[in-house]
Length: 154
Image 1 (tube, rainbow, N blue to C red):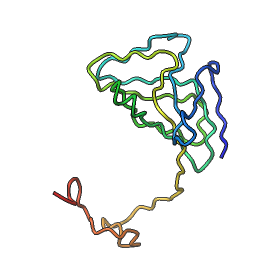
Image 2 (image 1 turned 90 degrees about the horizontal axis):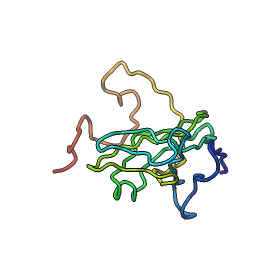
Image 3 (image 1 turned 45 degrees about the vertical axis):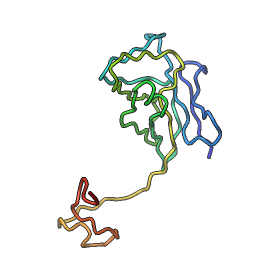
Image 4 (image 1 turned 90 degrees about the vertical axis):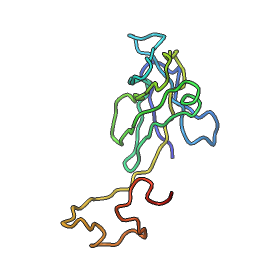
């Protein structure tokens, strides 16, 4: 599959795989005119970080923005829920959370996250009149029932 992307502010930091077999494309902080360098993320705060990228995502797919393990481990920066839907034509931003106790400063081109193309299963949800949601059509083989956190083992 070949998908198009466009860089909004020059071609200095395009999305790219570090290795041909990597699942994700590395995304980097691409500064805007307002923030040329030294983008700071205070401890225990969240910010939207611009990538300068727009992507053509086909129907039936999404782009999921995920952590880079090195950024999460070394800098304590975690990606919040980031899904880029098919048809979105705007710049991709990364929702970064600084879970550490130190200010993190991004420099232009710093890797911040990775983007993975994921298929989306087209489904139509139908409301059930009964709380026994498998009564109409038994689509699971699990006997879990309403068992929640920790219910499958001790």
